[in-house]
Length: 424
Ligand SMILES: Cc1cc2nc3c(=O)[nH]c(=O)nc-3n(C[C@H](O)[C@H](O)[C@H](O)COP(=O)(O)OP(=O)(O)OC[C@H]3O[C@@H](n4cnc5c(N)ncnc54)[C@H](O)[C@@H]3O)c2cc1C
Image (cartoon, rainbow, N blue to C red; front, side, top):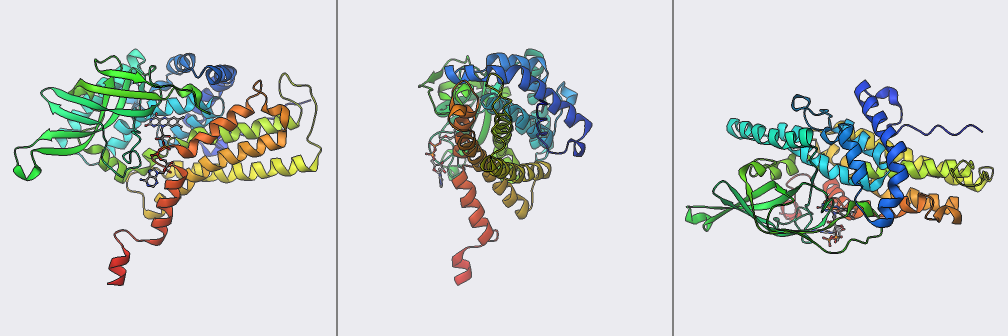
């Protein structure tokens, strides 16, 4: 019996550039041959996929968004998210952790390039990021992105509670980040903080505040990892708590110039849409599994076919419809990434992110119901996909609730509009 040919993660590969096809094929080979066979182990042990990161390093993929001039692969947004989705198809924890690393290079890379800086800031940023990129390309160092604090900051509704005080030659960082994926595994933690600078102007109350994005070395004195990690899903991300107790970092720890993060957050919303590709991959994996299960082709299972029952055909068709709806929005918004998207594109992005996160879980739930009891066994990947898929819409800054919240408001209010202004 001929095994099924599974769909390309980007739908029709003829719509891709040769470079995109090549990088997705690389991710596919790594995922299929190395990551998928190891995925159950990271999940069972709630352990970081160290071997997978060694493979990503050897393949040059740690530098996927590092500019080619600096030794990286120079991938743009669309290329990266398609590669990430393909990785998510084989191991969700690896793809999600990989995203935290890649964001450090993407935010400091082509996103920073698209933003306004004066000439001195840009020159300084180019000098500093070259140091970070050299660590990644030459030394294989891994970065992460602890962002969440448990308050309103990660939702963009309050300043970061983690503080960076400007001192001679650098900053002193104090604070706490929760759910810090790659804790204990990353070499540098890319921490978002509130910058405090002494001001001589009495109008400032003695202190100026701004945003700051710093790479804190994992081994710096004052960095402490704490807490348990035994979650429902995405167990290989090892997202424990990180504390920073008056940690000194030099000026060269900056991943963006002082204050630039707020400009990025306001003008480049796609920067927050890089978590969902992992879940696009999980949704595809649930469909792939269901088809091969119903065809009696799952390795290690008796070759019992279940495809002839109309109920199975309807369910798998429903899954495919949802999957293609999800993929269409995923691809469209991937290709729209850029600075200052118009209001429509921004709303489409919230809708896409919401759809991917929610549909991934809905497709996995339908896959479990359709494949039945045996598919829930730990010896098969579906129950892990189901658990992993549950995590996506909980992730800040764009949880499913917050996407709906923003979308609803932006559908009904023009920029700057308020009910008071209308009523007046
Ligand atoms: C597997 C996994 C890996 C993760 N990795 C990382 C990581 O590497 N780095 C990182 O920074 N974070 C990471 N996170 C954290 C994640 O983004 C959330 O911050 C975390 O799940 C805590 O969320 P919470 O539900 O406790 O947040 P809460 O702040 O308690 O929010 C609860 C819910 O309330 C809603 N809500 C929150 N704030 C507002 C608001 N202002 N207005 C309206 N509604 C609001 C949201 O819908 C949210 O889901 C990870 C999470 C998971 C599950």
